[in-house]
Image 1 (spheres, helix red, strand yellow):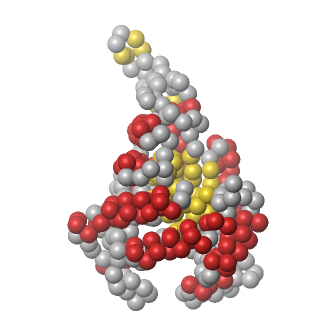
Image 2: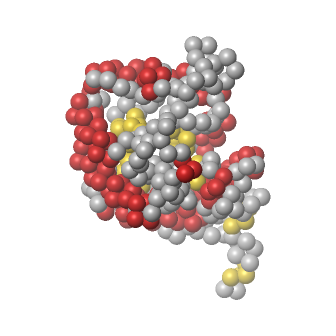
Image 3: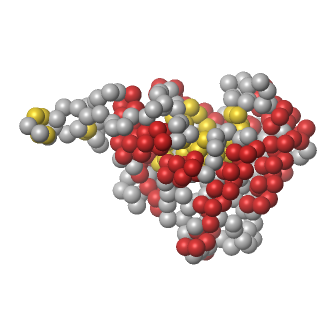
Length: 331
């Protein structure tokens, strides 16, 4: 049963000249001053969500995005600061791109944030999908198999940090600790200091394919899926990675042979339940239809669509909290 309401803010600044005929992404450039605006925006939205009774604000890790779309490079650090600006709201990492981190450094950063915020940072990991980011940090992405192999080893090391009092980890990419002398003895194991206060650590990951689901089940991870029409959501175990994917009546993914090739409209998204649009009773009915179909769901996420100005999005949050959330937030 859906009881919790989350928001995804990927970190875009307020964009101008948007739309199909707007400024192309690769032609956008913004000053340092403009790019900094996203941090104050995140604070303002977090404080409003805190006041309105939302549960988690999720943000996205990205790098080098001078185009102004996603400008937060460190989600744990961001969430730790936002926790000082709010009272009870949690802050989710959607997602720490593991191939761009050393898993032990990520584990240490999370553990510290978990302690000082008393559990208000929600851990999330992903493989990445921007070559400009992942390859620049020296990790593979163009080679998808190497990216997967590295990610899975990093995940195992991350879990060792959280779950074992002391450990020795040896894989293809990491040996921690290495067999070196230390203070007169040969180092055989290490301990994460500090370890998180709240164990076991709740770790979220995006669903991209059936293999992803198998990995989540193997390691006890929680799953998140966003921006897909209902048919694609049903077929996600067979679907390729992508955003805002729709399907025709025969289940063919939009743009594939035989399926519609035109640019999808907002109406297409509403028809396929990728977006809920309408009066509060219509939105409530739409969410309840998803709740009935997937009884294991306990959380529903609102995605702040890039291009929607902050003032308008905050107005949407107020309406949603007042007219929709009470239908689900039952005792």
